Length: 611
Image 1 (tube, helix red, strand yellow):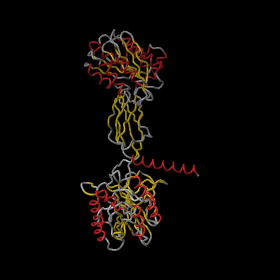
Image 2 (image 1 turned 90 degrees about the vertical axis):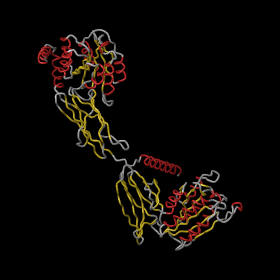
Image 3 (image 1 turned 90 degrees about the horizontal axis):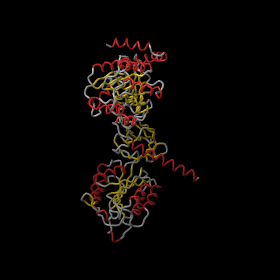
Image 4 (image 1 turned 135 degrees about the horizontal axis):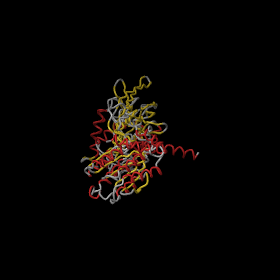
């Protein structure tokens, strides 16, 4: 049958106008299967989102023209017979479904033609897919069937508004037969204008099927016939609009996976790995021709890195590079009778202080001072601060005994206690720090901030642990923070026994800061079990020892870097151990560092402006 029709069509071609014959020569090249394929997304500069492991690949493939543009005309039968053959209007639903499935990133213009005994332009070529969907939903159903009129109306619109170099496609739907000679003549003209016709027949007519099959074949299109109108939505998707049978996707030589085809577009998800990902799209036309295209996407690892800083002495972990002298000052004021976790805060504090006295390293010199422990509150004794155990060898047991005897009685003379502590260190020139454990603010009118500042001038850092805060009348977080800040120390809150234990470890150990450029981005303590999470980059670690030590570190994504320091004969050596860790989001950390850097720049600008 096709051979006879081919002879008939050839005769029609020979009788066509000379201009049509010239264009037919070009169109013949398009219908022979010069497969073109283009990946439109992702681009080579694609930047994967945080933690992204897949990417959607979208593009267009064609064996009937270029892939830069796709101009598509729906030519829809609106004859009276559809009232019985397709009462629920699956015809429109199928066409709208195809429109909705076209790649949103592809440059596609779509028009709509309705035809019965004549053709009518229902929607001119447009990129607005909502307008197209509306036109398809509002198609009438009346009159007879004139395929040629519908095709000619679509060709006129393509001639008027079609884009040079585009793939031109006519989606022809009908449920009946039409004048055979006029339909074939319209097919020849469509072929001459470089437009492939994809045909879809609803019904079981052999004669109608033969006509539509030949029209599609002669123009490089495909034909599909369905008898059940409910299958029309899938049938529209199954039409190989641009002569492409299949598109597969692979990454870095992986097993190809099929992409979804809709019209002349394709889409599919592929996995991504850190580093280079070469994504290949491979197209096969209906006549077996093939072509491929590729895009290389580089995915940067945005994972955080982890930094731990430790110190060793004679092969065992220590909390300082130097001999370390730490005085713990305990709040024994009346407010420590307040309860937490069902027990008085003083009971909890005493238990923790007793426990940590055993596992503080032996190279740590300890002293214990208290305030508010000897005079009742009503006596208003603002000089109530006592050195319970001075620095000295073999004083761990005396410290434990003094802790056991503590009873909360009096006022909160923080400033007085800090001033008295100045003399407790005597002639010690070690790495010196004072750790103040308190649940309240100054109650005797002193100036703890000035006292902390004076300690700092003598090389003594004050760390402050806000313990069991909760009484609004006694607590003032900003005031407590100011005390620690005045001496360059840490302010840590502890709301439970475990948190108090962790806070003591953090504050007793030598502290350090991490800088990015001139901006301080993090603080830590030697030997802390909690690593610092930082984005990749170059940093400077400053150890607050005597004298201070500085060293550069470079972090890559997923680095788990342990920086170990050892001091021998006055010389500090550093050792690095790098492991790999699982992905940890760095989004919040990056945002924090950016805020700190912006604040630093603002301060520098203000200083420059005032000079």
